[in-house]
Figure (cartoon, rainbow, N blue to C red):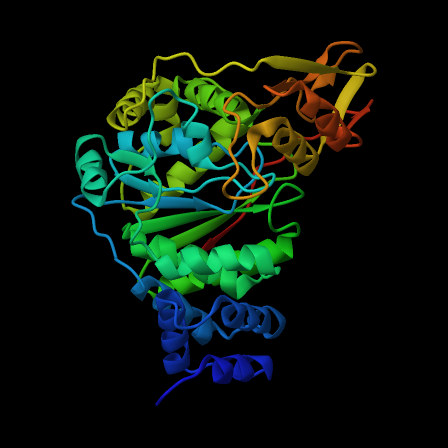
Length: 422
């Protein structure tokens, strides 16, 4: 049967269910340029408004996987994907930790957009480190080091790369079937033996409510399971920045603290929780908390960074300008809003508004207090780092109302809110 883009658009516009043949054809034709951007924009909006069945979403995922290469690795592997947050540098300590525990981690990561930071942007603040590796280089590094964090290869799910850029400029990003198929097409094509998803929920996350995060996590796990993937999802709190550092170089420095056996307790808690889930899916018995506390994973980090041209002992970039926000009164910090801090860091130069924008390696924010901490009037609360002092006023405007100081103690809660398994 001959298909046309208009027929496919009409089917979904009118609330119909796309056939396997229609999905296969439209994804392939769009990847090849036979279906125009404006036609795929119309289809994406129709999906956004009318949704897709699980069967449609699963087939859409498969079609995007089939648009490119499917990788395989010489050793047993497990991967992690985060839906993005503020101060979310978890990949940096997690990949070397899991590798040190005995399972290789091929972490193909992305860049930040808006207030959510990108793993590659953080790592590029390390002198000499490079993100782009060939498939052969990734395989060699997995065999020799056990961990690699790099950009996706060009041949990996090209349909998703093209469609994601289109969704970003057409208001069709916030759609569970399109989000789920985007994430899972890349992750299944990566070829890891198992996958753990860190689905963030809260003000600094893509999914603000627990119900929305649960819907996305369930869709991701179901798609992975249907494609023969071992997969589970942790719903984790992103109402407060993770750790104390938000930005690029400052997050690398904090990740190194964790790898050396220290670092903020919330960052350690989530790193260990995700590592435990990854090792469990991979069928490996190890105690990641003990390994992390011992500092052994730091040696794997050094080898991982050096293998990609980086100097793990080099000084990280320092900001040209530092502005300190002090506590207005004595008390207990009762709230520190992740979104407010994330947008402030973005305005300081830590993130980008468009994919082609550069980022400042030294830009970011250091949180001297987290909710539950006692603060004293006049002492540092937040430290703003930037190379462009003119950006400070915009950052301060984003922080207006983003923190509150009270008198009563604040109960600390677990970062892991729920776990969904296939």
